[in-house]
Image (tube, rainbow, N blue to C red):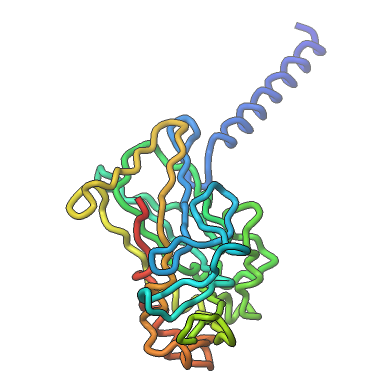
Length: 286
């Protein structure tokens, strides 16, 4: 074999090795699950006020659009009021875990979501095929992500909505708000919506991340009619969760006076109350 042939064969071998390495790396996700034995998990997060699904989303018709011909006001206790209108309800979701029917727990590494009003579908990642019985997650961020400035992209979606900079508290030492709720409160006896009270709840990540949401096991007991999450090769599975702000805000004794907090210097007790009741606002939709 001449020298030119040897060089040509070596080049071909090198190209084959590089191509093989590239193909292999593309089959792995950030959770270490190969494409050949996995499916995709989405979180489908519905914005609600006291069992009434709301929001101006454009992905199907899960939420009732607000605007002309539709009332943007919703009762948070019962049909006697008070009424609330959400303008900016958003929070981080991280530390997502799925219970497997085989008794193991799957942690979705490097997955951070930012839930807004107008979006409901949030891509998580690829997970191994299997049967999953329940979901757990944290409202808020890990300490590492909380220390990242908003110029660093850490939200799982390539185009997060809304942008994480809206949650930024101003410095790496302070980090982010884990949840922000902005809106209006109608306290008029005739429910006219005139001269409403402004609501502005900004809850620091340090408070929200301390409260993990643990949803019940599906397919058993009171949830026997709830189907399990069965992930097959190439499948896409949605975890439908209701995010009910009415159930969260109803823990305040007087929203007219407890209408704002930054969790640091303004109405700290209000922030503590809301943060401690965050798990109350989540439940399965189906």
